[in-house]
Image (tube, rainbow, N blue to C red; front, side, top):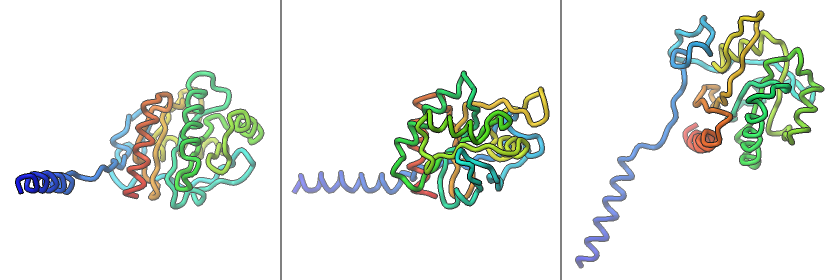
Length: 211
């Protein structure tokens, strides 16, 4: 009888603790919470309702890619350029690890925007995709109008620094952004850091349960 009471007590406490433990969740990032260097001044004050804007870009296969492609999907976005020799190769390798880890998960997609569309033509992006074993069904590399990419980077993804060298010039960062099915930013991650990639994968699992 004593043994039964002890076991019953342990089970009861475990159930009680489970009920009281809040389910993990993720923040929804707003412009006013992000480093001001990465946010366009016209939206820096914004404290709610921020979402990724509609876009119309072209991928490595010459196909139009719009927000519709990512409807009802969770996706990871970043900014890069194909001739970058500093952080981009590391970011690409880590994004490739995400691609391979999530290859069978149809709920998750990847999206990389060039910050140098004048250099990164469709042909250049295709060459880069082949060299890096990019799965075109999972991961779009996109180019297009420079102002549109600039506005997406600064006003939607809150992800790149402004450059003083010319109109719509950008200094891209190592940031990976986790975007939910409602087009909201749910996380920022250092795309050059393996531990941050593990955190991103963990957060994707959390987001799948709550989104």
